[in-house]
Length: 363
Figure 1: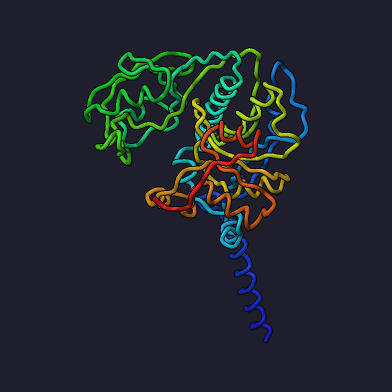
Figure 2 (figure 1 turned 45 degrees about the vertical axis):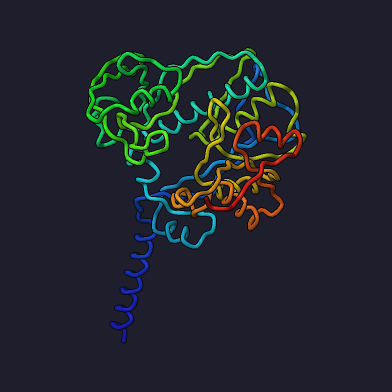
């Protein structure tokens, strides 16, 4: 009888050990969960002064944590958490390179936000286009190991452009395997390297029915900004491009002193181009939850007309606006989700309450 009890105890102890080890054992991926909704007034200074008006513009974020057995299982039952493969989050890059890329995205977003806000406010701004940040290099690119993450490409075949579209269009219609020379800056030193072009998968559009040619990199703009009055923006540990829209609103309102918030607690998410167009982002459902936890009653969400092709690629097969709206209906019923296609759409809502027309009809 004692031997049998001892055997059972050993089996139970082994099972508990297996559960504990398995639970804490790392899983090759990340858990995405609602992050913060930070008041942007703490990040922006104009003429070294902080915005002290009532209310807040908030930048929302998604929190990433390395997954283990327990957190993976938890993510399967939690409505506000999800498991993502490491390759889908980092693109196969190291943590150091991933963090570096997110910082480049943020710096580009802040530059675009300043351009949009100052132009709208009719204030003095000088944008010097340095070139394009290299955010990743395709494994099949002929420039693999020749250019690196963090390099700034300043010219191709001696041609310098004033935006990334110029570089893209210069290469777009070239033949595959065409030799081109890239001029880049690395650690404040210029270098040159040559390689052959490649056809870029998934780039067929009306403008480029046969797809685009390129050199196989992911890029974003590297722009130096000088303004009058002076602006200092420090995003702290927040990275990525998705804060562009909210930074542009914070800078504009603080710059013009129009007090468009009117004491309101306003959150949102979306990229911003230098022309003021708002782009989609990831994890918007989790950002709505973060905004609600911070007490926001308004949430700006990027709007794009849905199509079958688009919805196949979207999170939960919904556009940003659809997913944000549906999340708010279920978990934040007192929050108004406002769709925006441009910076001007957001301003119009703040000034007049006007909301653009939307549709769920799939094209």
